[in-house]
Amino acid sequence: MNSHLDPDLLSAYLDDEVTPNERTLVLEHLGGCEACQTELESLRWTVALLNRLPEVSPPRTFYVTEQMLEAPVPKLRWWRQWRNPFLGSLGAVAALLLCVLLIQMPQTSPNTASTAMESAAPAADSEIALEQEAPAEAAGDARQSTEVVEGAANTETMMEAPAEEAEAEPTEEAAEEEAASEEESDAITTLQATELSQEQGAEESAEEAPAEDGDDAASAADAAPEATLEVAPEADVPEIAESEPVQETEQIPFSTELPQQPEPVPDRTPLLVVSSVLVVLALGWVVWRKRQG
Amino acid sequence: MLFLLLLVLALLLAGLVYPASLFAQGEGQEPDDDELVRQAQKGDRHAFNRLVGRHQTLMYNIAYRVMGDPDRAADATQDAFVSAYKKLDQYSGGNFRAWMARIVKNQCYDLLRYEGRRPAASLEALMLTHDDPTPDMNQRAPERPDEATLQAEIAEWLQKVILQLPQDQRMALVMADVHGYSYEEIAEVTEVELGTVKSRLARARRKVRELLQSHSELLPAQYRL
Image (cartoon, rainbow over all chains, first blue to last red; front, top):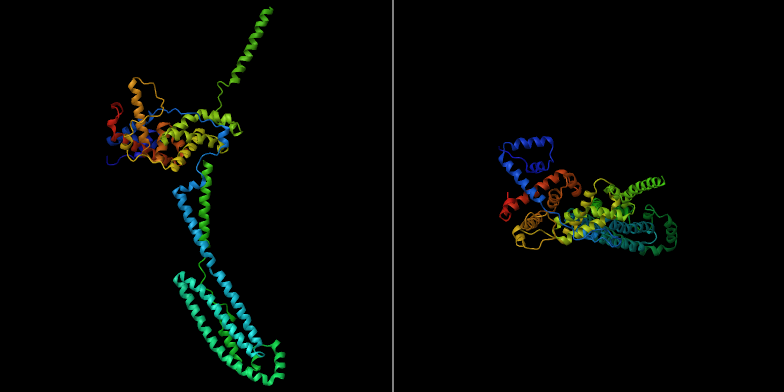
């Protein structure tokens, strides 16, 4: 015979733990295979020896007393069950994931974005104030322009901070942020140049303004509440052309659009959920084992 | 006539009292395991201890064969019974012996895992301790004086061979071949499928056979294959 019986089947046949078909198969095979007959006999001999093992007398009785019920059962405490390799590794992986997520989450864009938005709002507000006060206070324009520039510079700095931190992130995100910051710096540079020319013009108009102090100041004061982009060019700011404030406004990146947000960090919510589920499963397994005793 | 009436009355009284005394003693009406469990579940600790009395020898022997040490086996057995009493509400009837054996198995595994005990690296190392004093063993009445010694030595050696097995195979072998549990009971105790029980038992038997055959010179002639 080329093939022999499965050793597991022979062992089960010894205990009569086989189906009728399996029993028939074994009997037919044993009839023509000496090797399997020897295997069966050796197993039978082994089981017979084990059957002869004597019963051991207990050293004492094991009746349950009240004292035993009051004392805690000296079993493994729940934290020692983490010595189980599977449970220990599962818990370690879940804890590590949670730590990584918790450490990195506060550094994600929502905080940075809100800060950027907060800096953009005052910048936008200051821009509107600048437009409204242009006819009346040219010198004030220069101051506010400076503030806008400073505010833009601060915002740029604040935006650069997350950009720098994002350099630790994947390189694609860092490259995109650098490109955005470069664009912003170019816009700022253009703005500064334009503002410098405005300042020059404002100073000139400021020098001329006192000469026509009385009427012009009154008309400017009347016009100020209704100051608009259309009114501003009619004021004594000849250097500021009608379209220039609009262009400059458009060039200022904070007035019309929100500053470019840094690339949002990939949503880690799924990882957080998975790690939480792993921890819950591990704890549930511990509780289940405790209940099973 | 009066004497006869008194005699009949006495016999009647005796006939009434004697059967009643039999019922009072409970002879012939030993409650089964499930009945004792029901009483214990109502808070009757004495009923539970009657269960302990019935099964403690078997449970201790399982623990002893798995642990290989009488003191640790006693600790595992006692802890198992205390734990079983506290978890009686989880027993829903059927086979108390298997349910109790599962608790003993878990206690043994916990102790083995906690203590990091491992079987000896080789049977030769075990044979170096062949002369260690054996625990108290009840044996069949020997036919000859040296038969007892022979049986004790074989039993000790077999126990050491059993300790060579992985604990899963060891538990299956002890329950099946030493204590006669069925495959279904072993599957319930070890919480595995029937096929896994067959496989573990078959591997355990082959391993024991190999160890016995490799040192068959130590076996008396009548015990050799």
